[in-house]
Image 1: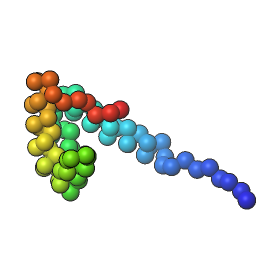
Image 2 (image 1 turned 90 degrees about the vertical axis):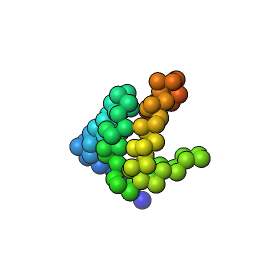
Image 3 (image 1 turned 135 degrees about the vertical axis):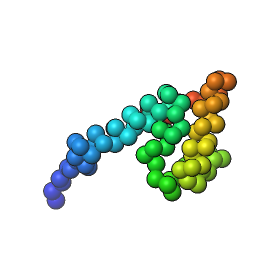
Length: 80
């Protein structure tokens, strides 16, 4: 039996993913809900314990509220 190790995706693919994450982190730091959801599809969803956001608009609305809450000390950055 022979084992062959392959790398998933090209360097360009990996960079494209890193670019999306970099934009997400910049949007988070700027408190910009529109930029935060810019790479989400219209039918994107978020599922977390006790949270279900059904589409990009709902995610945007909730991120706008979350960013507004940061001025009151609520909210935390996404895990890196």
